Every structure is written in C-alpha cells, then in structure tokens.
Image (cartoon, rainbow, N blue to C red; front, side):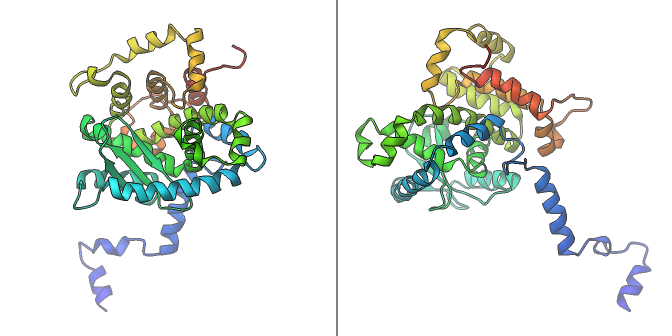
Amino acid sequence: MLRENYADQENPSPLHSMEHSFRAYTARRKAVEERRMSGNGLPDYAFSSDYEYRKRLDAIPHFYSVAKKICGTYASRTLQEINISGLLVGPEQYPDVYQMGCDCARILGIGIPNIYIINDQTLNALTICTDDIEPLIIIHSGLYERMTPGELRCVIGHECGHIQNQHGIYDILRQILVAAGTSAAGLLSVQLMNLMTQGVQFLLNAWDRAAEVTCDRAGMICSERVEDAYSVNAKLLYGAAIGDKETVNLEALKKQLEMQMGTLVRLEELFADHPAAVRRIMAEMEFARCEVFYRWRPELKEAGQSVCTKEETDERCRRYVDVIRKGK
C-alpha cells in the first residue's frame, strides 16, 4: 500500500528506478573488466613486448618453478626487514600516501597494497609481490620529498602496475642475478647458476625494460594529469635541474633522442634493466594518444582528439625502447 501511494507522488524516490539485482551488477562489472583485459590475461594497456619476453623466459625448462622457489624466500626475508626499517603508511600515518594507494588500486581494480617509506635519499620506489606475501610497495624518502603530490600518485600507480601485471617473480629473480656477482652470492644455487649460463640475465633485462613501459602506462592511467608522468621521468633523468616550476621541452627532448638512435652508445643499454628516462618519456607521449588510455580515462579525452590503435602505439614505443631493432 505504501509503495503504491509513493509511486503516485510527483517526485518519486530515486531508489524506485535503481537496479537492485546483484546479479545484474556483477554482470556489468565483469563486462567492464573483460573489456580491459587482453587475450593473454593481462590488462589491455600492457606493452606487448612485456608479454613476449615473458613467454621466452617461461619457455626455458624449469625456469618459472625454480624462480618461484627462490623468490619466495627472498620476498619473505625482505618483508621481515622492511617491517623493522620502514614506516607502514595508513590512515593515521602518511594518510596522503595511503589515500593515493587506495585510489590507484581502485582505478586498476586490484587490492590495496601495503606501502612503506624507508630512509633512503635515492629517487626510487620498488614493488615486492609473490604468492608468499601480500604485495608491498617501498618508497624511498628521497623520492617522497622530491615529487609533487601528482607525481607521487603517478609513481604509486606505476608500482601498482607491477602488481596487476604479475611482474614480481621475474623482477625479484633479476635482482638476485644482479647481486649474484657481489656479496649476495650466498643466495645462489646450482639451479640458479644454470639459469645464468643460459643468458637469462640479458633476457630478463630486456623484459624489465618492456615491463617498465607497461607500468609507466599504469601510472598514467592513475594520474590526474599525463604531464605528471612526464615530469616523474624528467626528475629521474635530470635530478635537481628539474624543479617544481621548471619543465622540459618535450619536442626538443625528442630531437635530442633522435640524434643518437643509431649510434653504438645505444648498445650499452643491453646491460640496463630500465629504459633511459628520455625513452620512457617518449613512450609515454605515444600512449597519451592511444585509444586504450582513453578507455580507462575517457574524461581526459579532448573533443575531436584523434587516437591511435594499441598496435600502432606499441610499434612506435618499440622504436624508442628496443635496444636492437630487427631489420635495422
């Protein structure tokens, strides 16, 4: 009776027209998520070279099972150490950073990661994520102090990208292999030495350079302005030369990069696990014109703005990021 009387009023309750079916809600949510996933089970924004290098790594006999066993021990020990030396952010401790983590996790559709700040003046952040521990993000105090709030949000989004794209095992193994020639040699096993003799480290470096492009895209998706993504890498590249008011002329930077694209100096990057920051900026500029970016952030698209396909964007990014180009 009450429902019938209420329906006759001039201003019915907004609840009257709401969809109350949980099944309908979950179906809509699933449809949105499926549109954002590619056929390989990774997010649609992921750089295709990221997946291609991982397939090559997984094709090595026993690679993943050995790597997972080694990395599980490493991750557990790292968590114990960081709980002693780092500050865990939360609603009452660095609430601004905690809220950024919540926002980025919501946008990407992942669980909220634990975020720690440690006393280290290098401009760096990293992520530890395996099946053995809850994902955690470590932010160096130097980076926290140097970045604007918008840039820090982009950094956290980048690190959340590592979690969403399941980079943990591969990245930790790369770190261990790098440490293998130093005082961390005690972590080595016969199996790990066998991996090293197969040139895995070079392949891991190539994968990691591609993975950074993937996660730069995640950072852009989580950012309020794409310019924040550019300035993060500019600060990583030029340090104190880039202040909060100074900006980089992107077109001039692009011309500067073009000058050395075909030189032998580029081969030195075979030993690098991250693309040069200037290359990352160029790859970000390409993604800022990609249709996938605006599927995630339609509100950032300007009226009449033309966009490129994912395939076109990835091919252009390869030109900047690949150290050795086939047929070149």
